[in-house]
Length: 312
Length: 283
Image (cartoon, rainbow over all chains, first blue to last red; front, top):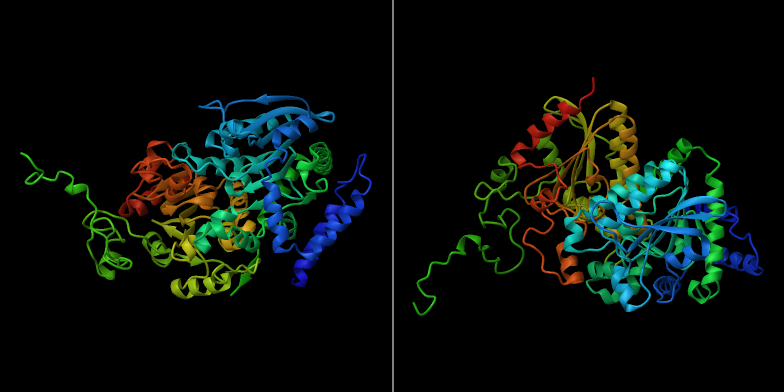
């Protein structure tokens, strides 16, 4: 790793340390574990560890958005429908209390059993889902409620009707709406952060990622099918494009990693929710100090710097 | 009549020409009607087939020559090149693919940007080139587009973007995906400054480019027959096993569903942009 990249990594790690992810009870031993994680981050995850993240991020028992909502928010009330044509069950929105404040929640939602999976379309939203999200963002902005999003999708749904209803434009406009919000925004990648369908609700002041979540430009299988001409080479593809949390921090794409209980979030959903709730609250408290214009400027400045350039 | 013999084949006009027996068709052979042209013939017709009006692909430099008033285009940020942040290696190293694309196209990356005039109206131009790694958007495409927005703000002029892209550049991983919000933030600043953006979608504009700046013009135009879908037809067919309509994702279908302001044939594009730039000109 070149020196400059390592400097950037260290800077981000110090920020991560400052995010107070460790407040709360029953976390004895977590500090040592986080230190281990930081050491691991510095060590660069191996190809095996990257693939393990891919498998954990998609684990059938992994907590989904509504599993966290019921544990983190009080008084949750779900908002349905895009006010145009439909209610997309693959993306949920609602109002709830986080501590003393009312927040707006937007998140992809996967199904647990076969029937619900089909009903939730495997967490793959139609344009109607993103329009519902934009409607919920407008509610947040109008009333000064912070926005919390939970990202967990293999991608936006690639279907004929989805295209006819304007999938590309809906994803673009959902991001544009997030860029313009005056209220504090925190996005958390809690499982699969799959491409445009994920970033559509993840343009935020603070982007957090759970330890075993993945965030990527394309699925490992999709990338393998195109570049290796064989979807079976997904492991190689994942190792090449590095969708794991450690690399996303290193590349400056996410602002902090939220620890998961030993073995992954599915082993202890209550513990995972507690850690996630604390991470969200700490991030919110940090950005609530700024005023609306400062937040928008800082948010734009953050995304303006993303990428790595060279010169001829 | 007991057999089909002797019947007039009413479908003949809708049949596509037989595929070339081997290898790829020559780039100057019309994929729609099979007519073949010399390069200078096609250049003269703006690369539109005189027989059937099929729109051939146009590279970034040729597109700028078609649209900008002669001698007015001043390129910006030509020195920018893609880095290789992931040291990406699939069947071949990313660095090698980049070098090859630069040699083949003579371009630094998949977009050419700069200040210019169209029908005497000052603007900034951001023009993509599908020939450079499928017009894929990585850090350099995002950066040059963002700088184009900033230059438009400084000069107080509208931005004209012409897109042609397969989507985000996989070889730059998550950083390629981050170019979506980056370009969108740049447009947000342009709009804050009162600037306008006119987006022209050409064949094909798919994936991450459609899901970011290309969809966000104050006015969105497309060339006839341009594919403009978030997911490509092959992915949709494989994932959903749905039967795709004949005009799946094409400009004509998008126009019907309300995603486009107009479909503009290439010979009219320059005049249409001139008209829009006059309408958006300030003061």
